[in-house]
Amino acid sequence: MKTVYRGERFFRDGEPFAIVRFSEASMANRVFHSHDFVEICYVCEGGGYHAVEDREYRVGKGDLFLINYDIAHAFYRGEEDGELVTYNLLFEPGFLDDSLLPFHDFSSLAMSYLFRSVWDDEPLRADLRLTYEEQREFETLIGKIMQEYTNRPVGCQAVIRALMIELIVKIMRGFQRKSASDPEQRRNASVIEAAVRHLDDRYYETISLGELARRAFLSKNYFASLFKETTGISVYQYVQHARIEQACRLMGETDRSLGGIALEVGFSDYKAFYSAFRKQKGVSPHVYRSGDV
Image (cartoon, rainbow, N blue to C red; front, side):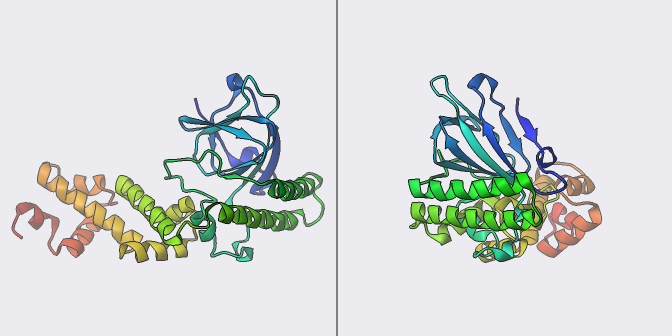
């Protein structure tokens, strides 16, 4: 059974950030869970395993994992292991002031696989294995963040934000070291292809641009621009097209009422369906179904 951790369990006083040092449980006592926030997990001591969906991978000191929304996973120590200790930095992307990041919103983070999309099928064994020097720098930063978070001096949130940005920059450098040859264009295409698959599967639902952008860890404006640049149409146009095409299929293969079909493919009412259908097909749904086109 999977447990879902909510941000309010960890975030205090409305702050969308928390840091937790945790000694992981044994396999028998592990908690398979997902969460509604982003997690950066760093293995600082010992060794063990990381179970992600239906896969398990060996982990050790220096391994860094970046875990997105709704990803079911669990860390645990094996029978042969001593203690497995992790630092977990939990936050919502909005906690960071992206105007201070030396990237285009969160696009460079996502495109560099810092925060992989929830649509990805192949989790990596470790997102990043830090070098010895990187581990020293990372642990120094984590120590400072933990101190600010624990002692709560005046201005601690601002200091934690600044330290988190420095930490993310160092992670970015690690990813550049790891995959400097990965073309940005290919990564852009991968993100949009994943979004298109999601839209094709969920066209009948209310899908907002903001939700798609959040899943991809991009700003709304950047995601919208990237989507249109890649597909030639906007997200709204793509969803409308998918709904109308499915409606055409249902009109040809079933005897369902036009009003029922409109609701089934995602329109709020027949009037909205009629307007969108006529705009796309040039005729009304009734005329299209009758074959007089």
